[in-house]
Length: 172
Image (cartoon, rainbow, N blue to C red):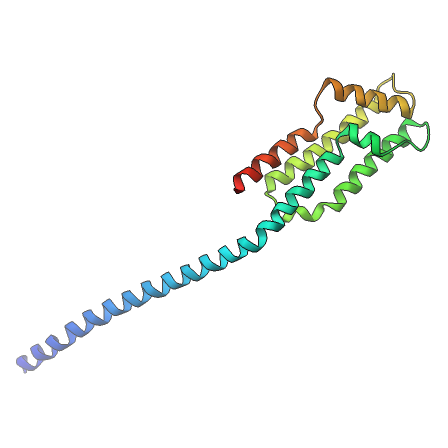
């Protein structure tokens, strides 16, 4: 009986070792196959999304260029001599531009979107500050004050444009 038990163990132990090795090998093989499929799928998605991301950066660049106060003032002319009406018109134009580009946020990093929003808000603040100055008494004077400030400093959208350039350069 002892001999039979010993013979049985001699057959079972190698079978168990072989089974364990086969199990580990197949588990590792299946895991590698899943990783390979995931990598190929991710690579294919990147190939399709890369042009969309670039287009989003292009559109946000265009937005930031369009809200540069000097360019905005050339494009949006006052409809009356009231500085408040002109301020509202300029801000509405900026907000409308932003609404056209809201969907771009899903293609760019969160930091980039925050910088673009900050540039927009800083431009609006610049317009509001210029409106509050005592020397600003009409829409035309508001244009002059804003342009003068742009000559003395940089437009707020420069920070956003610089950030976009850096982020796009990292993509290549």
